[in-house]
Amino acid sequence: MSRNARISIAGALFAVAVGLVVMTVMAFLRSSPPTVNFASGHQAGKPLDLTVQTVGSIGYGEHPTWVSYLIKAPDGRWVHTTLWDVPPNTRLNVTILQFDSGSPLRNPFLGLYMTGPKGSPATLNGKPIQVVDATQGNGVGHTFSIPALNVNVPLPGVDGNAKNFCNAAPCQTNEAHNTVQFSFVTPGSGSFRWQCFVPCGLAYLFGNGGPMQTIGYMDGFLTVVPA
Image (tube, rainbow, N blue to C red; front, side, top):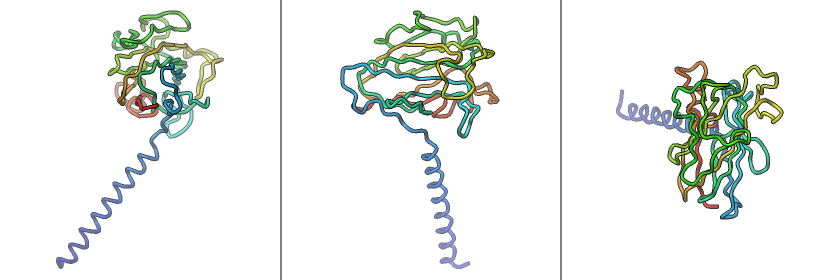
């Protein structure tokens, strides 16, 4: 085979490789969940209210049986995403509607409510709470945890056999749920990974695969951006 032929073949293979990389990147970008922007138009110094829900089954999309988080966008829509832009140095008043069943915690430490050095105490269905004993009642369904900000909020489970158990998102408040409320203050800048630490990826090794490792389901990023 001549030198020119070898060069031509090598060039063709390189072009194919580049094309595959581009296709993979584009596929990833297309599959990435949207980002909900709470920073745009926010008035500095005012608190920001966030409403979130956790569900036992998203009910649609590529993985309809996966557990998931959703967030209420500024226009009132429930959006299936875990990527949120928030303003800096702002108190976030968070309400999480927990619609999923629960189980005992593998690490009891995760039953402790922590909301950072400037956060407020948490409430469960309107009553103050500092720690949840996951060996009692319906256990804990999920946590909302931001390790870098010292935020850990366990979300007690509901009765999985309840007649009004929610089977597909977005769930409604007339369906069985627990309401957890708390607040914490965002730093001046940065992107902070948050996630659930309760292994809830059924059919995956030790429950830690699938939704537990997928942006848009059980983990995401809280990104602080200028208002």
